[in-house]
Image (cartoon, rainbow, N blue to C red; front, side, top):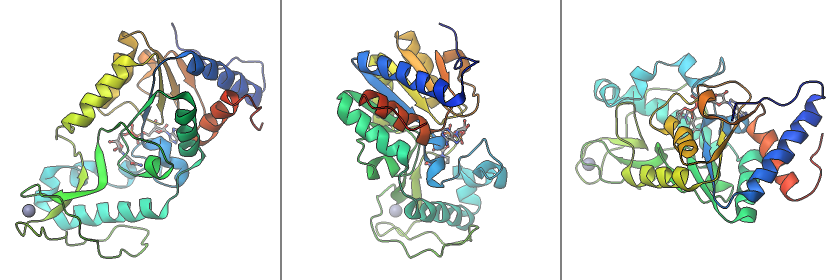
Length: 273
Ligand code: NAD
Ligand code: ZN
């Protein structure tokens, strides 16, 4: 099946409504659904994405300086300061209408596996069960040196508009430095989470891919994997992405508009124009 855009010659809102109705039909028919989310899922909660906008994180900082084990070894205060600033931003944020609609949609459908690349906790705070956090979780702190989990509360962080250098917490087990629980460039994905993601992608009949640029591997291979197993793949993203060859239908809309519209269709009501 080729990638299709909503029809021309209709108003945007009626094209969006047509798309919502079509995707809702596929969703209702699918026995198993897999939803893969990326940073765009949380953009409307005010959490910057890595790529795609002028205020995205990679346009303001160099990832090689901040999201690698080498960067940590070279300057852990710089890296910890950046992650502590990101944690504070997530703690101030709230789940958006897309997160909430996804939780309601999964409850209604009954067999939705949610795989996220996000390291925030907004899906959980919207009452979703996350099958796999394939890139870890900002708040699952552990020691860089011995790997021991770190549960002690963090010192409060001022709501600064830019990150400040900050000494990482000290591990209570070995006295080493505590790092965020995310997967850095060059690191392996958590085996259990990746296994669950592959299982969900292989088993689903419909995959919704929401707010990911499709550039970070191996997660970016999940839509192609689903398709090889016969699933239909629908992308929800306001901009074109590298996933185009693996996508059956590209729904050009944001997470917080498309997912509530989809839920409204499933519930049989008419979404707001
Ligand atoms: P990315 O930053 O590479 O791409 C973001 C994508 O979201 C783009 O394709 C953009 O067009 C799309 N987008 C922007 N606004 C959107 C909206 N309102 N609705 C739907 N889509 C929207 O993100 P990625 O592909 O997830 O990158 C991978 C890495 O980014 C992951 O490792 C993830 O851990 C990390 N990340 C996570 C967070 C978070 O946890 N909230 C934030 C930034 C980055
Ligand atoms: Zn330790």
